[in-house]
Image (cartoon, rainbow, N blue to C red; front, top):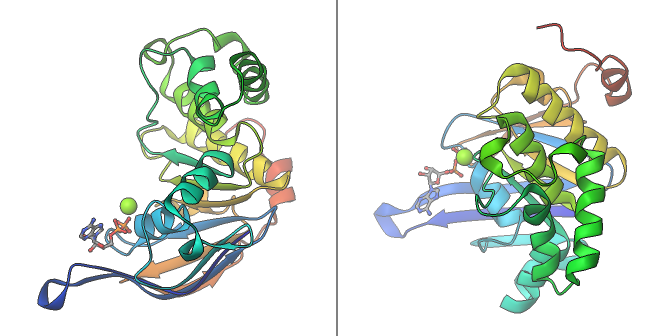
Length: 240
Ligand code: ADP
Ligand code: MG
C-alpha cells in the first residue's frame, strides 16, 4: 500500500542543507500498522508528509496504492489525498464551527459526495468509534479523547486505505492514548495500511512493527514481543 524506496528529503541547499531523510526504505502492507520512533528532528514528520504526498521527496520513489507519486499531477495528488489517505495530527485540527458529524463529513463533501450520503457515512464512522451520542456536539464541548476520536473518524471515513498519524496521542493522557492506538490497530486490521509516529514504546507495541529513525536513517526495525491479537485480547480496561 505504501512503499518508500531509497527516499531522500533535503531541505535547503549547500551549507544550509538539512538532510531530513537519507535513503529510507519502508513498505507497509494493507492490514499492517507500523510505528515510527526516533528523537526529535530525526525525520519522522518528514517521512509522513512525503508518504502523504504533502511534500515531494528530493530523490527516490514513493509509491502509494500502486502509483508513483512523482508521476502524478498536482490534481491527481490532491485527489489521492482526498480519497485514499487519512491524516491524523497531534492537535486534532477539527473545525470549531462544525459539529463532530460535519467535521467527519467534510472530506467526503470536498470530494463531491452528496451532503446526505456524506452525513450517513460520517455517522457510521462516528458510531464505529463510539461517538454516536456526540455527533451533534461541537469540538469545544468534547473531551480531548473524544476530539481525537472524531479526528480519527474523519481520517478513515469513506474508503481510505492509508492512514498517517503524526503523534496522535501527544496531547492525551495514557488511558486515551491507549484507546487511540487500539482504534488505529483495529482500523488497520480491517485492511488499511497505517503509519503512526509515537514517542512512547508502550504505545508503539500496538503496531506490527516498529521502525527507528535517527538523523534521517532507519537504524533499526523490530517486531513487538506480543502480536496484535494478543494485545487486542488484553486490551480491555486500562490498569492505570
Ligand atoms: P521529527 O518529526 O522527527 O522531529 P522532522 O521531520 O520534523 O523531524 O525534521 C527533520 C529535520 O528536517 C529537522 O532537522 C528539521 O529541522 C528539518 N526540517 C523539517 N521541515 C523543514 C522545513 N520545512 N524546512 C527546513 N528544514 C526542515
Ligand atoms: Mg515531528
